[in-house]
Image (cartoon, rainbow, N blue to C red; front, side, top):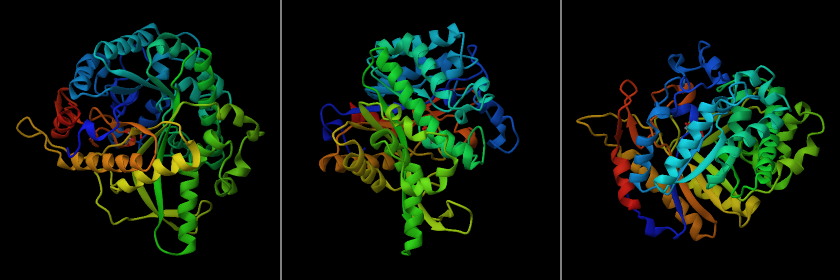
Length: 439
Ligand code: GCO
């Protein structure tokens, strides 16, 4: 790497991130069924109809995995708690094996000197709640607050930081408008409700954790920079709308108690009754703001109904996901978020990384592309800090190659290669480079 720890402020934290369903092995330990399991079992939704039954077998191998986190020199580990592992029916009686697992996982981090950074929900909704309408049902805010109390009642005393929901845009738009993620809906009314209820659930969980006496609570938002595909005012407006429903809707709700006007032109008629009355809960004060950043999109108009736009092919080099590599976007988001939404509140890059078609040869994986990606994005972070953005940490996505949702097990995001037949872990060259930079 072309940097070391010393290039960043002394209190700057380096971490790596994973999520429960992508690595644990959902078939183990008495977890209940989720909407991802039924989504994946439906033809056409997921590559080879793969699911998270085995994941990376982290449920059994978490100690080995945390040894690798510690050996790399990371300060923090960002993990998520599976709602259906803790409450197999979504509500009611907890699964003792599930609570015990997160308890052991937490202690295993502390024993290794790693700060536990939890996310309460990373996309696998218990099926029993999906049957009741899932994110379309306003009651989900209360169900989620109850789940929050159960899991944080057990491990909350040892958390370094907690965020309720990973990437509200994915829970709302990607899953209910584009239909790419569970529950796979393509319906604007469902989208408007899910977008609002996910923020109501976020605020309700923050309040529940304050009630438990917890602090260092935040929100984790994914952001994609949007540029117009050409110089026309129409293309500019489509990029602004993409920015509106992708980025500004969620920041606006949580930090300004308002949704962007260009987004409400489309979603307004489909919002749940009296949505304006929910902002006091949605905007419950948080202690930090997390940004997950991967790429940007070029947008142009089309003749479809609202939002009447589509992506154009971009000219920049791309990752295995087909995503353009655009570190400048991370710099822009860090500075813009501080200036327009969060002020002096600490910012964290809670996810950043790339998928690469890594191959194991002679027991080694050479992934210079990933090393370059990390260098370029950390340079963008440094630039933002130099200009006054209060960025306090960076989490690499991801520790392990894992289940990349609708794309199955073939998109390799890990610092560590996983052989999905044998479950053998092999650190890649980028892992070794990062370890040296952090030592
Ligand atoms: C995310 C994702 C991860 C994905 C990653 C790459 O939080 O964005 O939660 O689950 O694996 O983003 O697509």
